[in-house]
Length: 252
Image (cartoon, rainbow, N blue to C red; front, side, top):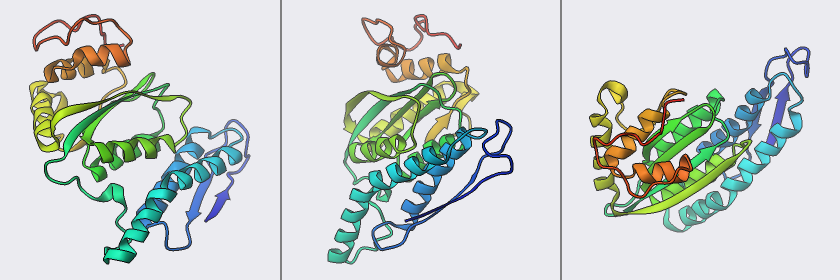
């Protein structure tokens, strides 16, 4: 793997721009998609740390992303060699089998501000067949659901992006198939009116002040209490029924 960094004029002065990152992966283990993920991870760190010393952090992010992808990439290459499946298809890019049971993950971040990280959150969810919502800003909140294998791949990729703080607060089985759970999620989105108009698949990106909207969505799904307990750290005796008050979750 080759990492090239082009330093901006004035680096690392506070008003300097982000460095330009170029990652080139050699060999048959990593696919083109894997190289793009490693590139995205390194670029996200470079952009977030613009105006300061960032070379070591970018190099570490590149290495962490490569390590996170190395095992599944090697497994995909080995499987391709034995079955004739193209090696460019990584395990995470294969859609979930029909009848797979659904899983939902609840993830908290200290913050989500970087545009490259927001893009990765949305792009990877679509690639892996996940649906969910993300509230960027302080704090960052991400809830996604799909097959168990896709959720694990998703969280593994996200961890490789290097956050100030990231915690998977809960991972719960949905006790129903991925397709059924996705249909329920789509119905809940539609029930929130124009807020999610036009959103079809993947993770819906909310505004930074839309915590209340997220709470309303999960009330409609019947898991508003879980949202408050694991994300907002509020006590809740039950998951409220549709039409209940938000129970203290404001939009700030």
